[in-house]
Image (cartoon, rainbow, N blue to C red; front, side, top):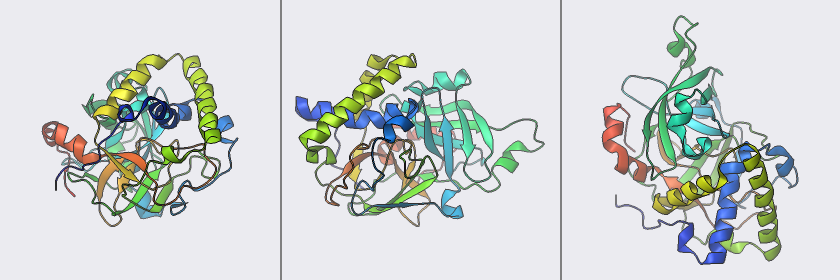
Length: 317
């Protein structure tokens, strides 16, 4: 299948729209790390697209899901199918301020499997591309267990990395840990949504909503700096990634805490994309014809196929 035609980043819009786009995108990346709850509590829980619904996952749906704790924030992730059956995990690079390999090496990345609750740590990075917001790494579990890997993974399931983008109109599901007041970081399935090419939800904001988002961003930025991170470097990397990543759009409802979670086509055992942005602070649902972006897995696979294949990672739709 040919690469998708919709590939965009914040710099493609005019100045005002680009600023708002950055304001909208960054809270998902940054605010989840910054004592998010007091900010979230200011808004009412809603489904952010009128069509999309959210619920608890079934046991089967939760089997690939992983919660990832990095030095900047906690995110979602998922187990990646591989030849050795090892605990290989994919998540978003921005969870570690785009320095995932360094965070892994310093022991600042840990994981929790949704099924069974086993906890482990990042052992080494398999692939971290500078042009993407995706990273694949190998985890390990406590050596105090006689068979730690087998015990930790006994209820787990693995996803392939899709090499083709989902077709326009394809029904989607999104897994993650949204941190809005309604879901409160519980494992969540967002569904009743699909790939579309409608106008970005950011273009539908009222002036009051834009002002509210800008104020929200300023509060989040202060907390970001208080954590000792270089905000300017983070923003520069953020803009670079969104300029070079392969981006698609959907009307799935997501929130901070969905970052790194897989975008799925129901019934298939492949991740077709990864969550990386949202419009979190708007208390009215957007129409189903609007859209929000996500990163297409096919672009990541195309860039890093050789590295992934050397690591035995399963690629396919």
